[in-house]
Amino acid sequence: MFSINTNKHRVDVDDIYDPVFEQIKFYSFDLDTEVNLWGAFFNIFSNESYNVSRFYDDDAAKMLEDILHENEFDVIQFEGLFVVPYLEVVKNNSKAKLIYRAHNIVFDVWERLAHTERFTPRRRYLQFLARRLKVYETEQINRFHQIFAISEPDRQSILHFGCETCLDVFPVALDFEKYVIDVKKTSFPTLFHLGAMDWRPNKEGLEWFIDEIWPDIEKLNSELRFYVAGKAMPQHFYDYDSDNLVVEGEVFDAVEFMNSKAIMIVPLLSGSGMRVKIIEGMAMKKCVIATTYAAEGLNYENGKDILIADTPDEFYRCILQCVTHPNRWREIGENARRTVERDHNLSVISERMLNVYHRLVNG
Image (tube, rainbow, N blue to C red):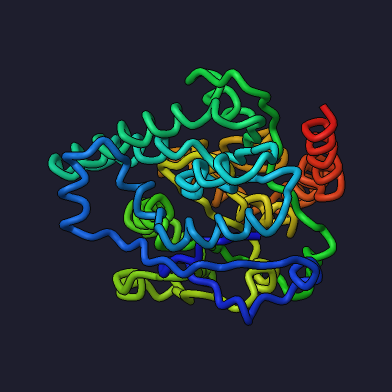
């Protein structure tokens, strides 16, 4: 495994504890991908996507080239768009079959962010970034032997912008042994939001919920608490003047945090791909109340295994329904667990993926 270890999502390799990790050769390259004002400005006059080009480094390419010279691989899988800049290095130094696993449609995320941006100069710059990303993303798709989409809507989008190579859907998969529910630890009535706040759709969605929806929700029940957790929590969330809003920041154990709360709130207004935290919440038998954007890509039935809310009034009614009828949120949580066990089983999805590897290698 070769990994770009960025400042923003830095992982301390010494802190990785996983049986699989002990059985592989792991190469990590530290890279500063922070946005540079001058770099962003001069990039305007190039034909490159600034979002992507920040992830390329000559020294990282040299490390990868050395790995390819020392080893012969059957299949090389690119995880997400931001390692695709190293595709040429791989093609020049390996005969392996190449797979691109699209974590989402990246340009779509930026188009939606631009759509919700009110400040005109920033909106136009976001639109510019989205156009550059779209060109890059669509140009790269047919340079691989196989594409893995993470959801059916993403598969349709990839087909729409001219994919001519093999394309299959492989959703997020979970090892359900890690998602153990202890109902005695679940506090009610409680709402919670869990997500990294350095991802702009999470931050904007949570701001919208707290500003537009939470003041009315808070009046429903004096004992109702809303817990907010996630890394890189901006200071202004701690400053909200609300007795029943508890901002915890980054939590050590996300599963334990979810286990202790009842109703999961996911108010995304933009984004693409598949929300892993929703799948994890469903695995923990949580009643998830989410926007249509947030639930995109999931095979759900509104009102059965998830509640969909796109307006303040819809969120209010869904939360009121759950708070006043505890059996309702428990029933949805039970159905949610069955849904993710059906669609996101690690063993089943891994076997399907392995079959694709065999097909590619053996023709």
